[in-house]
Amino acid sequence: MMIGTGLDFEKPIIELEKKIDELRNLATGHKVEFKDEIKKLEERLEKLKHQVFENLTPWQRVQIARHPKRPYTLDYIGGIMTEYLQIHGDRLFADDKALITGFAKINGQDVLVLGHQKGRDTKENLMRNFGSAHPEGYRKAIRAMKLAEKFGVPIISFVDTPGAYPGMGAEERGQAEAIAYNLAEMIKLRVPVIVIVIGEGGSGGALGIGVGDKIFVLENAYYSVISPEGCAAILWKDRAKAPDAAAVLKLTGPDLLELGVIDEVIKEPLGGAHRGPVETAKNIKEAILRNLKELNELTPEELVKSRYKKFRKMGVFEE
Image (cartoon, rainbow, N blue to C red):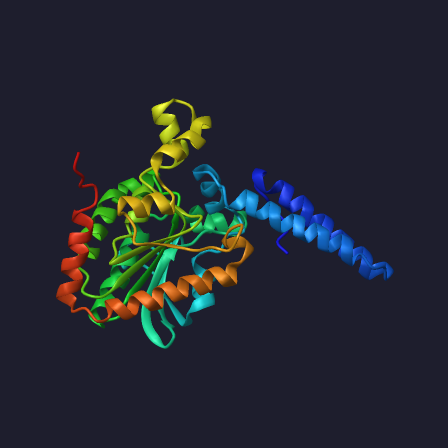
């Protein structure tokens, strides 16, 4: 049972989970039967979960996407891949630990996997820069992707960042150029590229490793040109209006699917990936393998042509 750090709208669920655990511990310690009481509470808990999690607002999904216990890139690599060998450094400046990459196997097939990586505590978050990559992170990523292209290896990209790091050092080292270069080069890659937004998909920081043949978003992840708080600060000069901004930004999976920005929404367990990381990893693996099978049948020329067409038609509409 998942008990711990909770969001505001999760508190009634967490309180009920605590009561059930207390009754179980009491029954074990004192050899007293509470089966009927526990069963009633479990039924009430299940009903409450459905009421809360099946009617989430866009802002609540953003909060789940940022949940501190949500699985990160390395968790998914460990859960669905084997023989992971990490690649370090951009051969120009440094090794950015906010963006990781390396070769691995998925069901015996070689893949290059890359993604943003956040930390679990303050020390690790400082080392990972809270998942906000520097230019050297994006340059390391494209270096690895071109290596994968050279050997005909498909690429799997996990997106989970509030945005690229906007600090002075990053700007001095060419943050905007590094992301723009990745966009131009990824569109031309002659191997299959699958992108999965697993948490936050923030602006250019997400796009820097987000150009693919197939783009998936987890059910409680978001993908947006700006954070809800940033949007609220610009439009209403009030970051407190972030929930309103989240609603109008159309940043959740169903809206993105309807707009043609993504190809599929990957299901999460009731309550979010942090409540069922194994099941979530299983769903991601199934989506990767199913789509890799389809993409592997295309020639390099067909891949590039269809990927270019896919991105060119985004934003085109008729009145």
